[in-house]
Image (cartoon, rainbow, N blue to C red; front, side, top):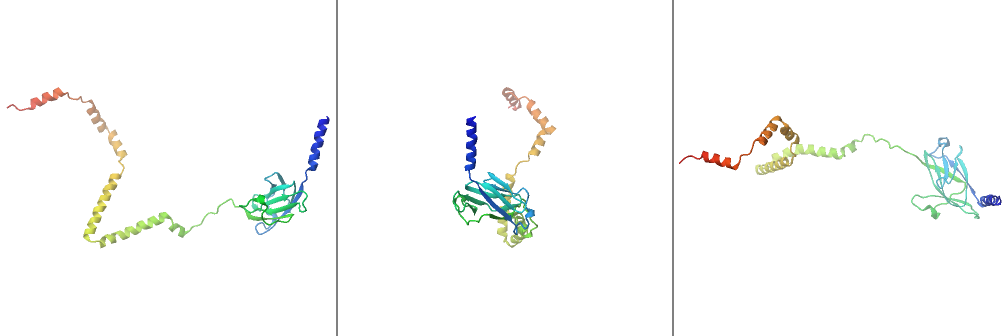
Length: 236
């Protein structure tokens, strides 16, 4: 019984010894958030991701108790983006609560930046945008497309090449025709065989019958072949 009483007393003493400072602030309207009624009722103030949290009142005010230390304060909102602050709370200092806006890319533990006076005056920096607007019709973008460029070059060659051939002398034109024929022959040799036609020919009844006949015909022995050749020789 005495040990239980001592444990409870020590817990109460530790709770009383822990000093918490009240952090206060208010969200103000601006061009991004012209009216605080547009703020979602679920908007909260979080310290270190939720170690300490409180709701924002209808008029934008908030307050919560935070113990001494270095803390990250942010506004949790579904519709707007707010500045994050570094809270520096020291016990025994003349200025117990100090807030510094966090600069993206900088280490917030170094206490850099301009000190913001307490209570905090928080304003929205921008609005959340979860959707990408659909792009409209752009005729310049259509003509700069690689497919349109390839099509334009092909059409240009169709009109230019005949004129170039007509202006060539007979010898150059003959060489051009020979090179064209060689290129066409190489392209034909690189073409894949017609697999469908080969399968149809192989599976046709005539092909099957000829293959079965060739398979079933017995091979002639060497002796029989020699006898037939002797019979065919004319008598001298």
